[in-house]
Length: 333
Ligand code: UT7
Image 1 (cartoon, rainbow, N blue to C red):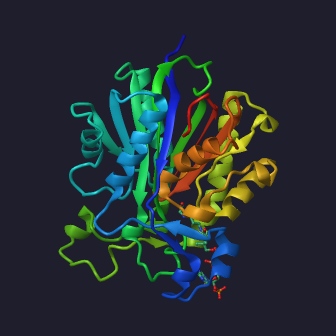
Image 2: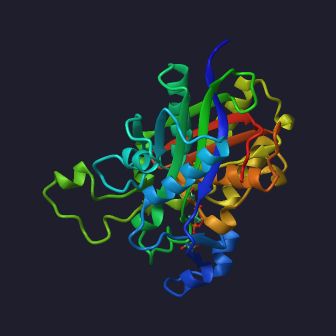
């Protein structure tokens, strides 16, 4: 039988500091009412000065390892768009802090779709027999690349991380990814972009303008593409897995906007209550979003062993993807 990766543990981490919509409204022209009604977000977590993505990644990774009942894995894949440094990648530092020096460790950059890209990479390592166990972490600290006074972005994003441990197993075991799809369209790169800091701006000879290190987003356009791409990818993985729509117990989509997730559920024909939401407390945590939501759904009993879970994401790049799996009997703390 084909060898694949099975979800064997899950964990997450968020910073302690909370910033409410009311606090945001003190520093920009917005309101709690606008943010709640247009996004579903009430508050988000923000890292403390001096801390970074790797701190969240290590904490989420430790919890996932504990959930899997192990302290060893053969590889670490970190999905992030907010690495600690441009060079080197953040994953080796995370692996070292998890007392895993020597294992292959690398970053995957697909922004809000990052966790699904990272998961796919981890599954590939197992399928190729390059690893028997892989820790896949999604972690981002988007508040470090957002203008804290920009009402187009500051209300949406927060900091957070989640992680899963994959172990080698068979495709018919609970926890095996039944189907996965990934996609990208770089023609839409300008929809969400940090203009400065990369080789394009650095080689131009033109110093970065103030604010160019912050992320710009064309929210309305992103919204439209997100609904279409997440819905199409979700349909496609269900078809490939041979799962009828009504067999899906929970949609755990990328937590960007409650209206996006409800639209995806509606387009698919799923009742809105099957769309899991925790963005009210965390906002959009980018690569952290899906594993953070999966962990919370499992820890609170909303997602039970044996449930069929569908996940989908869309993000900068643009990138998108979906995956479906039967939830395994893992300890979610
Ligand atoms: O993870 C992938 C990355 N990101 C996303 O998935 C985000 C996708 N986009 C969105 O979630 C939504 O587009 C936003 C939440 C960003 C914006 O919501 P919207 O319903 O698309 O609002 P809009 O941009 O169409 O703006 C509607 C109005 C505008 O005023 P006028 O032109 O109608 O007078 C905006 O200027 O709301 C105004 N507005 C705000 N008002 C108060 C925009 N942002 C705010 C704000 N507070 N924060």
